[in-house]
Length: 103
Image 1 (tube, rainbow, N blue to C red):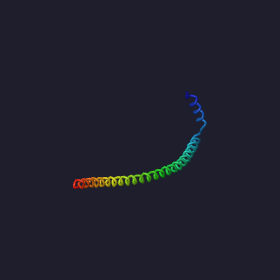
Image 2: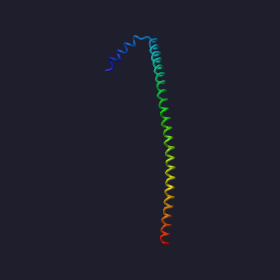
Image 3: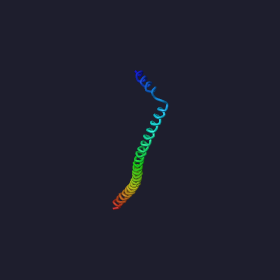
Image 4: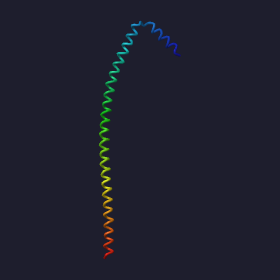
């Protein structure tokens, strides 16, 4: 299956001189460097966008964490107030029962 392709390649290679191979390598290197630079620029642009979005998301996350802490503190305060009011209510009920018994 590969014989015709290999023969064609050998025939093509017979026509090249060593200096032609150096020229081909130099052209390939130049193209590779060009693509490498273009890729690097595009990669850096995309990477900067990703970093900016990550920073925004991280800032948002920190803000949410702070709000969560605030809500937990409020919940704790409300729970303490409910316990205090419950205690006061029970004392008031006991006091009213004592008053009713004395009457």
